[in-house]
Length: 166
Image 1 (cartoon, rainbow, N blue to C red):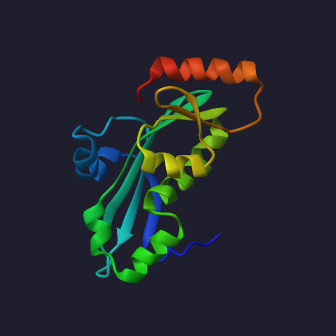
Image 2: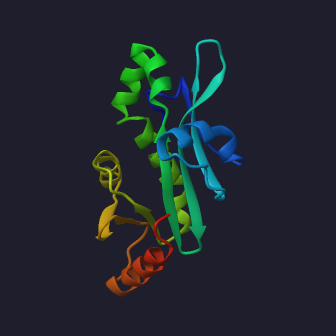
């Protein structure tokens, strides 16, 4: 399946996430990129052919659940893109949505649920549109990867809550 951003955005899992996302992550969270196992970066291919990281998210694997976190985007880079590039990104719902959608397609089949912590309404708009639901206040959210009974969902919520915030 092709996307309007395929010609200038490459989204991929990278082994050394902090090497690519440290600056973006620091600006957003005022912290170092955690050394989790799964790092997904969107790279913008500039007109000169060079690639620049523009968006990032990480995933942590806890066997039957995964945690999503650390989503951030470099707004300065987005503003340097051409008008057609920005319009294409808007057409797919934004770069953060594209990175999260790619990541969910890659990681969700490996687990029963993906959990996150979300207190930001802008992020919630993206995540709820991708199937997440609020499962525990104040910020724990889940996206079920397969049909589960309520007892199993409660078990997984308890497990995720024990790790939170992540």
